Image 1 (tube, rainbow over the protein chains, first blue to last red):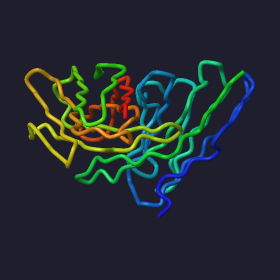
Image 2: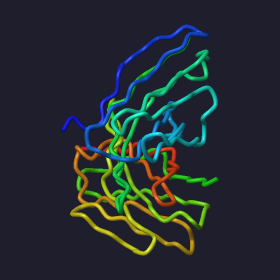
Image 3: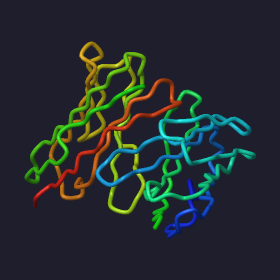
Length: 113
Length: 111
């Protein structure tokens, strides 16, 4: 199993541009999450999904959108990028049926200038 | 929402000594408390977790204690080794939906 994979690893965006961060898991997990991690801070939940077709907002959803059309994929969309969205983004998944253990991807470092 | 506070933010210990990291939480509905280790340039990795119906859990050199009344939980690492150097995060969750993380502790083990 590859686990949780994220692409791209790095990206530089100009203010106002849009992009999609990709996340795929091959563990047949039903729960998936998107977090952002700012320097010296913990992870903040952006959006999460409890299964295909179901998504919900986390702590910091403004400026982001998600979709979950399949169990494996959970892309995060940034519309009209702003400097405040400069961060490292982590995708995670968990099986959740009796186990809440989260498996994290390697992260995407995004800079908005 | 939930508020998780973590202390200290940095911790240096001599190899072989113990390290303790403490977290407090605010929402009494939280029932799952994981600890993650994050190495430079990588995603967090779960090292140990505890549920609210248990007061202590141990896995080799790592242990976690939970005091539900006081709403705090702690990570204990004994016989520290240089490879334990990393950033450690605590988190709290209610039923595995939303997770709230502490701000992290950078642990350095001095050989």
